[in-house]
Length: 521
Ligand SMILES: Nc1ncnc2c1ncn2[C@@H]1O[C@H](COP(=O)(O)OP(=O)(O)OP(=O)(O)O)[C@@H](O)[C@H]1O
Ligand SMILES: [Mg+2]
Image 1 (tube, helix red, strand yellow):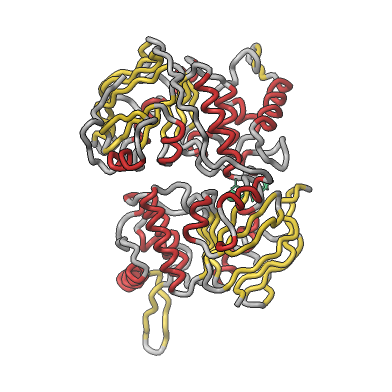
Image 2 (image 1 turned 180 degrees about the vertical axis):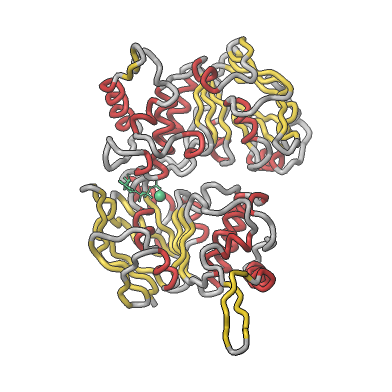
């Protein structure tokens, strides 16, 4: 039986058609994947089903009855919940408090024959209720933990929990896996299968086609706002889906010629670098490595093993307590981010909205951010509008950033297109060293292919790349050498041409082997 159906949904933003005549249906109890290139209109469509946006045309039917949602509250009342890619949790509150937020039921007291409402919540009872759902779905959480103490994967479970508490039976997950570690993804898929067994219906967006094949029952492919494929999983495969999405054959993994292109010139040297967190814990310990010209050095590791702090140290956002960083022979330890960029180090940060782009500014502002006071863009303290616009237009074209209007704010870009904008800006600056952290997060398969090739070409021109990624296949296929971080330290170093996935995987789990001893520099 169809539980959700859309008929001819159309939505435009100032004349730009984000959804065109979209009709599809979801059967009760199925897991349906929604895939498509960046800017294809996936989030827009899900926001419409969740009542966050109103369609210009078309209708939505829930259990064959037409509905017209004015807000997510209406959608939730009809049993539809959504977990957004960027969580909406309050870190200082507990799991239970976050779940209750917005629908708190307060305690009543009886005074004689009258029942009076009090402003007090029966926390004991609520905590018990929340814990019951946690246990039912095997979430391995405690209702009274503060959200700020939870891992990303656990926070996502709290978001799902919020929906389950509101008793929805259709759950939309927008790119739930893009910020998760492989272990967390496995756990999420278990949750999804478990929810399905409990009669829930799931719609989920992903860019990882392996995940579609792994967990979904059927898949809808959207291209330029239109449906170009809607089929059971059994009738398709990754190659077919990619072809439909992009409109051509896509190389799903780069074929890197393993010819050694590395020159014997060390351009970047990190020596015994250490730092402590706010809580006084040493999160980066004695890290040493070097990057040569022409080389891509991959940093692998399960997220949360010091990679983020290492990146912050190298970006100038955290101070080293010990150790040194040298770039082209110059000591640049603890320099300001501005100086680091000026010296010729480009940075693709891991969190695009935190350190990569500013949503409230225009695309042009973001394209020049960090490079705005160069002579091509600025003279006598005045920005050169024409040059800036030319740069914006050429980068949008070169990196295939899909937008509704060039004049718009970054806020109106889809997640993946924002990421492409940052990648474009950093490549354009043509640094000597590019530090790229999780560069392909949220990007579609076609754009990943282009970005990976750009990274290889960049290195082939004698530039150096430090690639930090929790995506093991990305690190394996692009790097010349791989260092693995575990609990803030470098636990091993491998030659990428010879290393196997298993070897890297064991190191990531903290298991050192013979022969993988460090050969720094
Ligand atoms: N508020 C807005 N104003 C103008 N254009 C918008 C707005 N929101 C989205 N768009 C445009 O609509 C198109 C579809 O965006 P949407 O976020 O649905 O894409 P998506 O398929 O989710 O992409 P991604 O994979 O990158 O998340 C994009 O080209 C985007 O620029
Ligand atoms: Mg999206």
